Length: 159
Picture 1 (tube, rainbow, N blue to C red):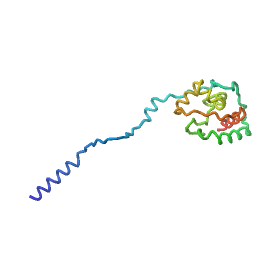
Picture 2: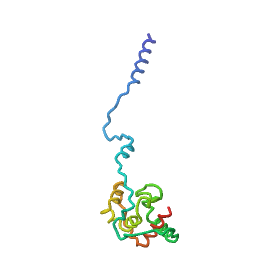
Picture 3: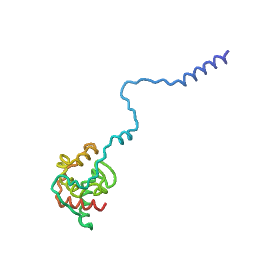
Picture 4: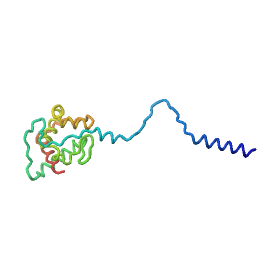
C-alpha cells in the first residue's frame, strides 16, 4: 500500500512539474527583441554628394596635390582638442566618423559645416539628414577662424 501511495505521489509531482504556469505580474516589464533588422529597413542613408558646397562663407576650395604637413599638424591639435568629443576617426560616435569624409562631401561642405553648423543645419539637406541620422545631436559652433577650420580640413585629408 505504501508503494502505491508513493507511486501516486511521485506521478503527481512529475505531472505538476511538467506544466508551465504563466504568472501575471503587475508593474513594468521589458521585452528585449532584436531591432537591428527594423533599423536596417527604416534607415535612410545620407546621400554621398560631392557637388553640394553647403551654406556658409566658403564657396570655392581646391586642395593642392600635396598635403601641407604644418597645417595638418595644427589641424590635428585642434581636432584632438575639440572635435574628439563627438567624432572618432573611423567609428560612429555622437557624430559621423571623419575618415574618408572627402569621399562623401566636398571640401567646401566640410569647411562650411565646421564654420557655420547652425546655418548648415537650418538650410542644408545633407546636414539635416545627418542630424536626423545621429538622433538630433547638433554640431556646436566652435567659433573657429577660417584659418583654423582650414587646418582641420587639411588634417582630415591625412586620414
